[in-house]
Image (cartoon, rainbow, N blue to C red; front, side, top):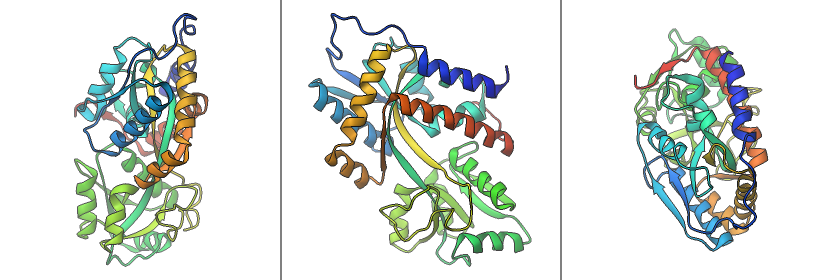
Length: 328
């Protein structure tokens, strides 16, 4: 079985192979629910988890505990939750960067991420944005592409590491636009943004939240967003399609997962309740204030997104020849 077939089969197992429904005599939840965040406190994933925690506490009247277990790019937290009973009392955050990109780009991961978790609910999307230094000659995506074709050497871009979603997004841009680029990997996204601001890089793609203050202060110039829609925070910035690059839609997203083999009744209940709770006006406003694009989905819809993204990014990784070894 090749990797593509295995991913498709595994996605189906994670989404469908659940244990029988709840015992009739036990109402879920009968005690506090815990959400593990596999990254440090204060980041965007942590913010999303705490909003979901408020939704669950409001709905069920039980405390929701947020527990940060960072390390190894999220693997530490994933290993911990994957080894717990699939009873619905410990959940974990996840998304494109942790549940899709590593399985299709990294060999010898210490756990099978796809088979270890079941999608429960999508919380929101992150719009990605293409930015250049303020004094870069390109003032549009078309001009950036033209500049790349005229340049005697490949334009440089930065990312937060080999095999990350930003790396693959940039390679997708190169192949779609028919240009050569030079990848400069950094340990984190902040370093890539700093070098873009300083003019050491020609451009970079980034999640929206850290870029907004740099745009407002005039240190960076936005050329396009990678979503299919213009965004509320920067309505003047065109989409990639509007900027002349068709069939280029990339959004990062965050959601809630549970250990594989959680009872289907719990998965369905949590998915509906989280999505419904996040659609309330106060929660929508708080997601938007944190620079998220609210896109709550229940477990059925989120499982479809998860599988579709696995298939899509596997193809991109193969086309870009990105293959890494864990720990190297």
